[in-house]
Length: 171
Image 1 (cartoon, helix red, strand yellow):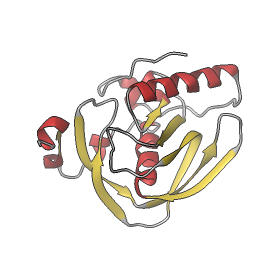
Image 2 (cartoon, rainbow, N blue to C red):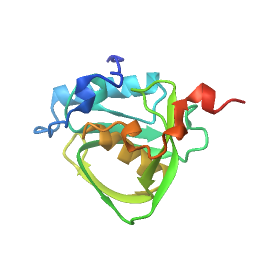
Image 3 (cartoon, rainbow, N blue to C red):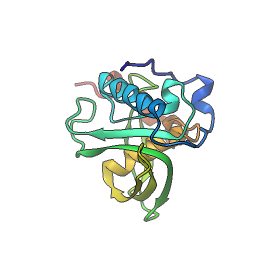
Image 4 (cartoon, rainbow, N blue to C red):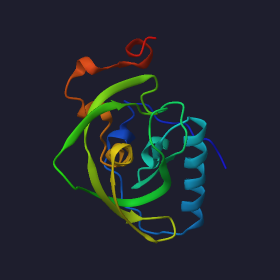
């Protein structure tokens, strides 16, 4: 498979609402998912949305065990999520730092729902229905925002909490 180029903020594909996936369990879909996995792993990401590699469809992948970019984060099971629907389980939100492979080197504090339910399908057509919280909920919300044409800086409420990682987290 292949490591694909990750589009950067400013690319018009990242600002579009993605199309629903109509056919599951196809060779083309499986190949795209393998490319996304290779790309996410090579970039040390916690997740990747298809629009980030130029495919404007409702497909995200996410999951981490140990990750240099998020050393304090709990594990998130590897998931392929197609045509997702997210519902908050509480109105409670939590502010935390986020980064994005489409904004390399940047970080910002973003409010996200603490607990969500997400539904959708995996690449084989199996239904997914999970209640999650914490970092897992944050990752899903972040990746699914890409399918709506939303990048995390659009959700930042205090722009003083946005900048280059190397400037913010000076040791």
